[in-house]
Image 1: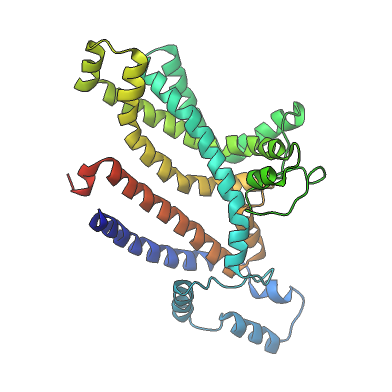
Image 2: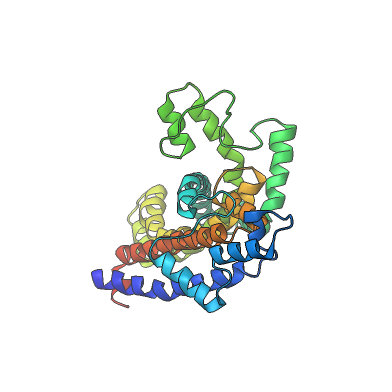
Amino acid sequence: MIKFFLKRLALTVPTFLALMFITFVAIRLVPGDPVEVRVGERGISPERLAYFRHELGLDQPVWKQFFDYVWNILHGDFGVSLATNEKVLTEFFTLFPATIELSFFAMLFASAIGIPAGAVAAVKRGSWFDQGLMALSVTGFSMPIFWWGLLLIMLVAERWGLTPVSGRIDLIKYYFEPVTGFMTVDAWLSGQKGAFLDALHHLILPAIVLGTVPLATIARMTRSSMLEVLSEDYVRTARAKGLSPFRVVGLHALRNALIPVVTVIGLSVGGLMAGAVLTETIFSWPGIGKWLIESIGRRDYPALQGGVMLVSTVVILVNLGVDVLYGVINPRIRHGR
């Protein structure tokens, strides 16, 4: 098992290096001058401009800037934000809990609905439920996040008044010092009546919007995997023994069908992080996605580089964990079978 883990870990190194290179190049393709963020857009003497360029390392050759960038990252230094003068790593871990919380509830929503729906569709193959689910899955997978989010805001929040439009909690009614950074947890720990439910209330719309694409993917994968498992000999044997349909489907079939579904859930983390950029912007959710969008507008090189690399690192580590978990669930993978 250790050999299998080390082999998978070694495969992530080239990916990590490629990400550092792509991030470095892509950030420098963003139009604008980052020095203006530090000194403003008003007139400045050439001497002062040269001083600030030297301070930011922008007067060095591009290849040296890249190697300095790699060296600093390998030593845990992701730079200092040009806009706030805060360490990028500090800002990231301050905002990251909000993104994690939103992603967790989005995936909880997607899994809680997608897995049962996909299993029922497989059992009732060819029925109206099966065909309807597949049609909804294609629609959900193809739906643009920004359009879906704005539609829900206009209908659910504005017209019907069922949920808040933005934010993580009603700051007028509830105020408490953050402990963990996770609003639902902090609201629960605060002991204020109604705070926890209000935090959940603010999560409903953004979690639905962010979880729609994973929901469609999980439902389709569960259905496909269940159809394959239901045709296996051991399932037919269980039915022949007179076991109840619930026991055959729930215990024997679904349990084995979940192996590829677990992989899909893990691989969906990257999609959640990408979707969080739009979702957090639409719902004014103070997380990493909104922070990165604001950093683009401010041409904040260190924040963009560090933020993208940190998010990419999280995605790589999650995929590594899922890969290892897949090997634990199915030992044949560890032995290359």
